[in-house]
Image (cartoon, rainbow, N blue to C red; front, top):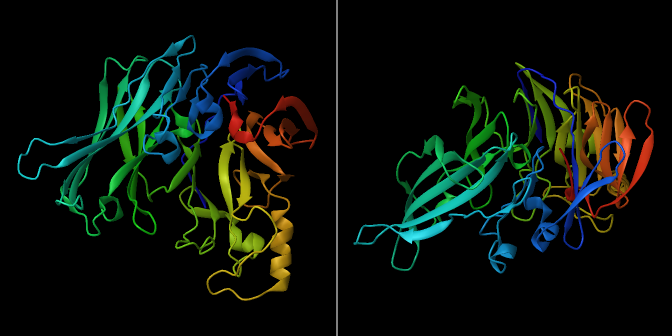
Length: 411
């Protein structure tokens, strides 16, 4: 589900760089006008294998900072890699697990760290969660006290400057023996892993069956400080934001749990004093009876914030056997319609950002990369990057090959 909070709509900057990951171990910068290669960098193989952990800013800085506890990262040592625009730099991550100073049943102190680029390229932003846990003799978690900190450093990680501290309400009882199932913590987000004119902090309880979202704070710079604004509702999964942080697009994943994929309707909302419904999965696809969900994987605002593009994907990747949803009934017509839609996905849809209407354009078998100009879009389609003119519908295929849209970074 999308939720967009509209305060104002300042013009966004036209992208100036296109970076593409290419096997076996390169990232190439292309000229957007001609799609000719400008320069090539050799990168660690991990970046090719895990593009979801790569962030790039408009200055050409590249950061690979995967979560340390991600299972596939453990065997590799979770290597951090940073290109400052001119040369490779070393960064030290500070995720840690230590014992506190109390001698009688000392608390276990765990810290997790996120690192973000900045739009201007002059500094790095760091987000830290610190968990002080009390456990029993068997390692069962009994209670936790969590705090979070945001700070800024230079590109070498030096000269730290605190931005803000976020505190919990004191000690929280870990009712199930796992603190994350019943106790809140903070989650941080900045668009594309780059801090420009905002970042979002959301207080969540990860939960055992599903995440509970409590509140979201939108931080924006005011002089040399950052001011927090509590948003009217917590943001579950922010996807993109306008340059001035006035227009914020957020996904709310399906509420299904316990192996069910389709327990609620994915939607898209636009809020400007009131909430307007732009996209409703059940209304669009009529898929209540079957356990398949059609959701939006990403979203991008056009350079003038007049249009919104997003990729629709399905939890079912082929039109084979599709089970009934919990409480669903056999419906041959609905099943045939669902199977037909699945064969067209993924698909990029473009809608006007100011009016409620069906998509003005749908690009089937494609995934979104980004906007080149206000009415010109770049997608990944059939293993290549393809350029579309929204006004004329004209298609221009480039010679740049990609495995998926995740390999391309339009900045």
